[in-house]
Image (cartoon, rainbow over the protein chains, first blue to last red):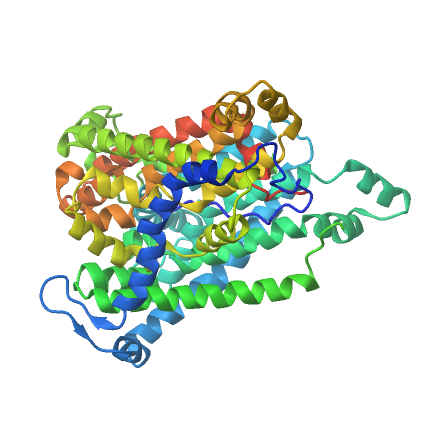
Length: 310
Length: 263
């Protein structure tokens, strides 16, 4: 789903659960957990194991399936188109994530002092993250068209026509990324706003009394206090950006050529256009492995810059 | 001032969407065409609505989103309470397993889920649109966080009065947790309403299409009817925008509550 909300860290300060007022909670727990765990087993755990199994098969939607071992993995790894697809996804992630973080943090800092109407600002910047992604992408597709709004702005200001953003392979990925930043940064902006609101004013005052200027206060007070929010914003944004699908699907259909074909778009095509479920499942596992790896690296790196206040 | 300028630039795509939705088709592209066309055609909205069964798409989307949200809220409240307040074997391990699955991208399970739907005979049905995503661990996690902050003493008093666990949950815990449940419900509704990849895979008839699929259908059938497409896009945004406006008070708080904000 488009707006996956991140998993926060386990609260350290929270009361240890259990030690409750009832004894023999076992049966009650069974009742309370049954609905969610049964759905969870059927729709998460079993499919997860199933998808690994399917990736070892040639599995057409109709017709005979055949065990092929690691063949799907080997074929994908030696397929130049898939190389390009991975590269495209990587380029998207590497450009999109920092842009998203910088824009959302910048605006959160800008809006966070008690300026008039900041609630309204926050709300309006947040709107595109909750409107249907496909609708947003179609609006941008209209803007990007030759003869469309952006092209006309180019003509008016620079006197030259704009590049054919979606049809030119030097521009298509940039166009996809720009639209994605526009639609996506509002969420992190709210995350950072919540983080900023929680920094005690007294810390800034103390730093001011010690003679710290605004820049110094930003580096030594705001950033460290905000680092847990930053950490989670980064992890979640990274994970979701590897899953980019709707934007290239609706803006460029992966084109021109395969210039904006991403992993999930490729997965969709292999599985549900070419009807090759085995290959699609294998792409899913590539995606999963990359996400796990990147997340693990992030967690390893967090000690160096994330400050928890205990 | 500068901030307002930035905001206006940011809102341009939406402004352009509405402007295009009100133009005569011949004036969508081309030099010298401004924000407002030679006439303001409200009829584009009616035409877009009638071009494809958009009313049906809206009803499908609302039904799927509301039913999905109801299932998510009920199952999450129950399991979150169990993890927050009950003592049972393997509790922490089961909870960790829940947490672990938050990292699994939807795309990994999409293929087996599709096969499962074929086995159940659910392809092209409401069940397929609703159930597969009604059991994510996120709701359990969010509500557990909140339940842990509720003082235990409140429940102890009810226990002494002889209330059962379920009754305590319904009459003591849930009223206090209303803001958290509202945030979960809103996020879940929006996710369902906007969802695209899964409906694209599991729906193959017009009658079962949700709104995003309807927009996609529109595009593939009438690729150059931009004025109608923009009218349809504007309509598709209404429910979630209304929801966010109604909920704005809780928005930042809700995000802080999910543990992300400062501490």
